[in-house]
Amino acid sequence: MRRPGGGPRPAYDHGRLNVDGGRPVDLSAHADLAVADLEVADLHPAVGDPALNSMNFLNEVAQRYPDAVSLAAGRPYEEFFDVADLHRHLETFRAHLADDLGYGPAQVHRALFQYGRTKGIIHDLVARNLAVDEEITVDPESIVVTVGCQEAMLLVLRALRAGPADVLLAVAPTYVGLTGAARLVDLPVRPVAGGPAGIDLADLRAQVRRARAEGLRPRACYVMPDFANPSGASIGLADRRRLLDLAAAEDLLLIEDNPYGLFHADGAGRVPTLKALDTGRRVVYLGSFAKTVLPGARVGYLVADQRVRDADGTVGPLADQLAKIKSMVTVNTSAIAQAVVGGALLAHGCSLVAANTRERAAYARNLRHLVDGLARRFPDPSPVRWNVPAGGFFAVVSVPFPVDDALLRRSAEDYGVLWTPMAHFYDDTAPVAALRLSISAVTPAQIDTGLDRLAALIADELARSPVPAARG
Ligand SMILES: Cc1ncc(COP(=O)(O)O)c(C=O)c1O
Image (cartoon, rainbow, N blue to C red; front, side, top):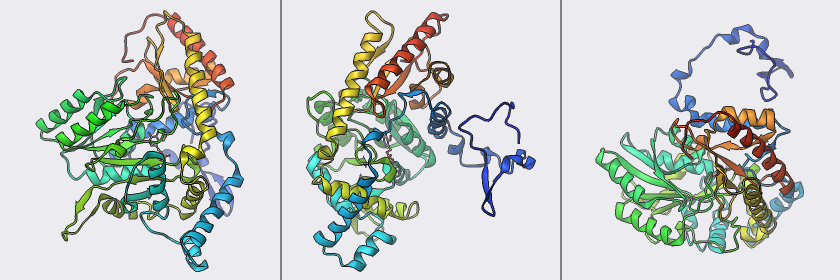
């Protein structure tokens, strides 16, 4: 099959390789592949939705321009990874099963090699981690260990979407993985204004009431109170309390997603999570070990301690209902992956704050380096603006021209720098005049190179003819 428009196959397109008797066969040689067997319009609408293309598009650009400096990836820094740690953590967890929990050899084998408990096997350790690092006290039975935080989102949204009147509210700009998961379960997402304070509480109240006035049922509001992806914004303590009060007054659940909370950069200390402040079981808490242990394990979790009355009248945690869904999605989270994460937790007294001393210092240094570098390259007065997050992996740069995928491609091809168009985090097609920069997977020297290249791109764009204003 010829590529539409001909031309060389881009580096990221690996062709359609199949295996024939052990030999790879290039299926693109088969002309009949040009004939479609199915139309995308006949598949679930989410498949054709931009939200589901977003991550693939960004990955494709990154793979096509491997030499470009990437200020796009929200991955953890790779130089700290060590294969020996995987073996060590596995052994630490095995020893924990045998020595702390008293498992005999057969039980150890079963725990590590077999299908396992749907809600996971490191729930006690996760609960200890939450107590040690976050002062969150939860019954381990309220925890479901998931295949990344992404699965946790999907399980929660699947459960909350009971009927066509249900909608989700989400602080905008929104992590695209949340929008995509909502699409998969046919749950419309309505934006709530974020702004520098992390959430506009008046807008949240207005959105809840507007939805209800339209006969809709807002099931929850998705928030990232600490160093949000993509905005970098955080919600202050007073607003966290007000948000919980508002959720109680409006009878609304909050879904708190917290992958970056450990990585504060300003030395001011951490603000309690919503879940730590939650006395009324309003908050479903989502956790990820991707940034704090390793993303390759694909382990995350949810805390859902809301009480649910089952059809037979028994009452149990929402986690039990979510586990039913999980049993039909991923059966259980890999025991090996959980063991590696469990070992990493045990190695540091269940404190990820302690486990990430080096990482926290490196990310804080990089974030300072980024904002200082922006200030040097765009001195006042400049039409280029950026926020100064108190931590996390991301900052947002606003420019006086729309920032789209075509500009990203040009940035990669002609300037050698990658970043993320903020348009990917809005659920509409309005132009967005902003881009997200990430500091997590680069060195200060790479940040300098990336910013020099970005500054050259921005200077060239500013020198072009005036462009219509767009959302910043
Ligand atoms: C806000 C947010 N939530 C969830 C995730 C997904 O986490 P996981 O890798 O554990 O699935 C990410 C990943 O970047 C994220 O930024």
